Image (cartoon, rainbow, N blue to C red; front, side, top):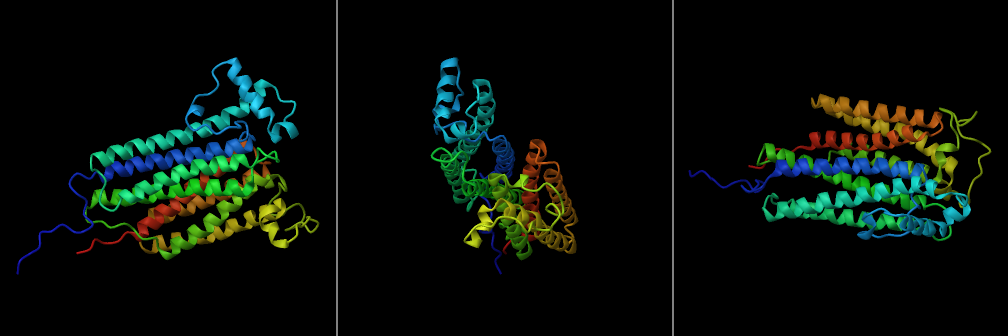
Amino acid sequence: MATSTAAPASAAPSSARPRALSLWLFVIAAMVLAMVVVGGITRLTESGLSIARWEPISGTLPPLGEAQWQAEFAAYKATPQYLRVNSGMNLGEFKNIFFWEYVHRLLGRLIGLVFALPLLWFAWKRAIPRGYGWKLVGILALGGLQGAIGWWMVASGLVDRPEVSHIRLAIHLLTALTIFSACLWVGLDLRALGEDATARPARMPTVGIWALSLLVLQLMFGAYVAGLDAGFAFNSWPRMGDEWFPSEAPMITPWLRNLVDNPIMVQFIHRWLAWGVAAGAAALAFEAFRRERNIWGAAVIVAVALQISLGIATLVAGVPIPLAATHQGMAVILLGTILAASHALGRRPATV
C-alpha cells in the first residue's frame, strides 16, 4: 500500500511565519490593554470632550504654538461641557484635560499603524498561513470601525449634554475588548501552528463560553458605572449604606430603564454580578485542573480574585483615579486569562 506524502490541509506553507505573526498580535493586544487603561483615565478625568473635532490625520500633531492652543480652547468653549461644567477653566487647566484625550487618540492611531503596516509586509512576504488572512483583515476593519465608534461616542457630548452617552461608551469599550480578544485568540492559534504545522485553530469550550459571557455582561455594566459616575453613588461594601439595596432609591419609568440608566441600580448589578463572574471563572478553573492545565486553572483563580478585590477597594476608597484605572486594566487581564485558559482547553488534535 502506498503511503501518502501530502501535507495535512491545515499545514502552513513553507514561507509562513506563524510565530512572528503571533508575537506581533500579542504586542497589539498589549497596546489595546494600554489604550483601555488610558481611556479609563480619560473618562475619570472628564477629558474625553476636550478635543471637539475629529481629525484622523491632521489631529496627530498637538497644538504647537499659542495661537493653535487658543484655537483648540475656543472650540472647547463652545461645547456643553465647558458652558455647563467648566466655564471658569483657564488655558492651563484645559491643557491638562487635553493631554489625556490626545494621548488616547494618538495611541489609537499608533495601534492602527502597528497593525496595518506589518500586515502589509507579512502579506507581501506571503508569510500568512492559509486560513488566517481573512481573520487579520477582519481585525483591521474592526479597528477602523472602533475609531468611528470613538468619535460617535464623543459626538454625543458635543450637542446638548455635557458628557458622553454611557451606552455609546459601553459599545466603544466592548469593541476595544473584542479587538483585544481577537488578537489574543488568533495569536494563540498561530503560536500553536508555529509549534506544530498540523495544529488546528482551537475551539472555545462550553465552560469558557459561559465564563466569557458573564464577564462580557459585567464589563458592559462596568462601562455603565463609569459613564454614569455610578461608582460615587454608594462607597460602602457589602451594603449600600445601611441596606443591601437602598429602599428610598429613586426609580425610573418604565422600570426596565433602571437596568441601564439608574446609577444606583447599575452599581448594585455591577457589585453582585461580580460573583457570577467568579462562579464562571471557578467552573473554568475546575475544568482546567481536571484536565491537568494547572497553571491556567490557578491563573484564572488569581485573576478573578485580584479583580474583585480591586473593585471593592476602588469603591470603598471613593473611586480614586489610580485604583480605578488599575481595576479597569485588571478587567482586561482577567479577560485575557479566561481566553488563554479556554484556548488551552480548546486545543484540537491535528487531522490525519
